[in-house]
Length: 479
Image 1 (cartoon, rainbow, N blue to C red):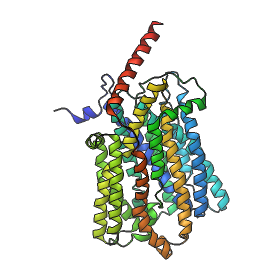
Image 2: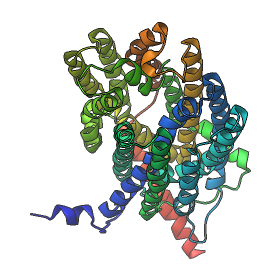
Image 3: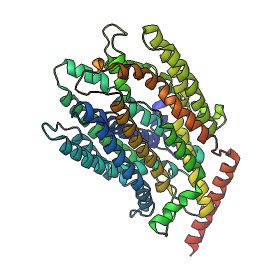
Image 4: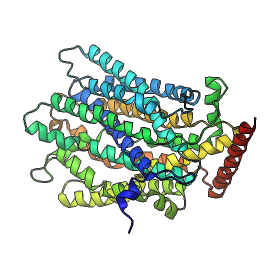
């Protein structure tokens, strides 16, 4: 019997294959990056509102404005990445070494106790650090995800890379998901909330980014000429990538789910369901148990996609499952242990599919880059995967704006305990938590239905591109 550890850490590569050792290092790097991203995206707004006591609408507006501005910059950053190479001809891997320490330091700096600063100065400080963080993070993110499309000319190997990326990203997000439990424990040990937030800004923020440097071991094996067109002309090649455009629009619409961060529901409405378990710990326990299928599902992402009939059909199945299950969850309720268990089961049902949506997005995007190269002769990994970051920024911005407006309309008061908020705020928590994302899933489903996913055409394009590259290499050697 073959040793599974030797298989996992094997450096052996045949033909277009990528060694398991490299895939494992890549997944580890994604885990580190997503520890940082999950902590910042999930808790920075909460920290600003509930720790720094900045007005909810102002926080929503500031994060919306900064995210939209940063989103506009992302295609420019992607084009910059596409147009530059290092001495070895690589355009992605250098960013995986030089950007993480800076991102980690800025992640730590965002959670400082700003003391008696005025609200305006607090906003200015957070905005300045966040904008700088976000620009540098964009370079790392474009390179980190874009390397999927250049690690191998084989779509099968790229799918393996996308799967390991999903496993790593999911693991990192899950680790950051322990924050509420750690927070509850450290508060019980005598630390104050500022100290807890700063401690985990170092653990998840700084150390997560240092761990992300492992992704540098991923190879960059598909080489292409540097685009000769201007920066904005290079960006215009996106118009040839209908698949990427549809995925981007679908992801943006999916974010219109009219809800606030889950912590508000658990800290205000879910206390006392289980004796001795507060809202913070229940959020962690429920999040962990309701996501068990997602933990194991990512390991079988390729098989699940094949069973569904392809990546597009996997995305359709995920949306339908979420809509149906969330409607059922709403009517079940969340007030007794039995109801919590039923909701947990229903969450597991749809998250088996939804946990693999990002895997399907990246696989389809990698294949679509081949399609653009086939049609134009130009390969645009940087711009294409900058769109992933572009959409994330748009979603972060719109979520921030909607959350700020919703909390304002519900008259949320950050100076009062979450369990002592007004009746309207308390009443709306369950509909937003249970049904809000179902609205986004329906909008997503409508758009994603127009994506084309033809396996035979993909293999034909892959074969013809390989022939082109070999012919170009032969001509260059004979010149």
